[in-house]
Length: 185
Ligand code: HEC
Ligand code: HEC
Ligand code: HEC
Image 1 (cartoon, rainbow, N blue to C red):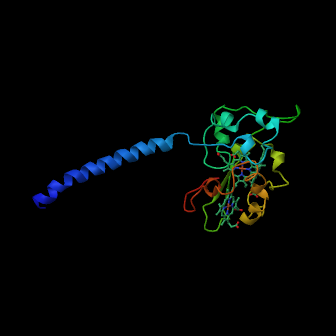
Image 2: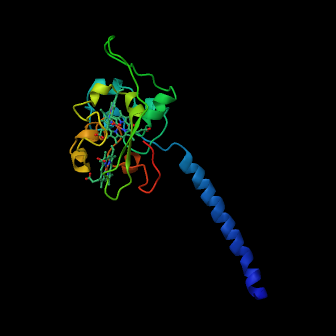
Image 3: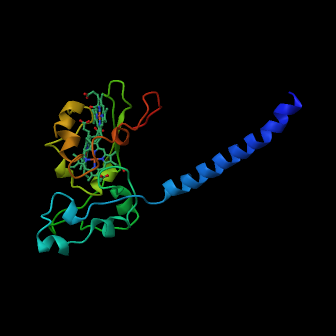
């Protein structure tokens, strides 16, 4: 290495440091909450002319306090519930037996996609067994003829995902288990 290149490396190092500082600075900017929600008058759902629309709470006011998620209405609802930030009523009828089930089902008919892990716990914290059994899903793993096409047409998981739960564009949230992973049920 000649003296010439050594002298030139000083400004190069300075630029590298500057770039690093810039990356760190923008990194922290990305970490901040950048979520945005439409106002009721601007969401193309409510009538912007109606005085009732103006009386509605702005989604940002309620939702910005809840843990973030990139898709749908930008809230991680499972986390919000577990962290006690929301406390929805568990039942409508006093006679309903509220029960949860902590059992994951591994669904392997995914061709080249990662396997799907269906978590009973996250679902039964919101839903009753009868919401799914046995109209949507049979009570024996691997026996319901689920397919992605049917899901995209609003059947099976698609009854809720894309309607009231996170959207179907979030492939990895369902297809979460690498095909080569050692898996337990
Ligand atoms: C959101 C939908 C959903 C809800 C709610 C739900 N399940 Fe399931 N359940 C499934 C799916 C999906 C499967 C797998 C079906 C398949 O692979 O054919 C399954 C399978 C099962 C199985 C078979 C497990 C096995 O290894 O063979 C049992 C037992 C079961 N559920 C019990 C329950 C009970 C009890 C509740 C309520 C506490 C409940 N489920 C609530 C979706 C649900
Ligand atoms: C709400 C959960 C969910 C989401 C989101 C989801 N999938 Fe699936 N996917 C499933 C389930 C369940 C199966 C069926 C697994 C089984 O029966 O063993 C499946 C099956 C598949 C299959 C296998 C072939 C077929 O037609 O069934 C492919 C490929 C696939 N999904 C691709 C995708 C892609 C790409 C995305 C994102 C655009 C996606 N999935 C999003 C749950 C989901
Ligand atoms: C009856 C409605 C319903 C059906 C059917 C349903 N889900 Fe869900 N799912 C929910 C709700 C509600 C949540 C919680 C809200 C959210 O995360 O958007 C949820 C959350 C999830 C989560 C996130 C769990 C976590 O820890 O964050 C996964 C993964 C998931 N569902 C996969 C599936 C798969 C796979 C199927 C089909 C085999 C399915 N769901 C069928 C309603 C449903």
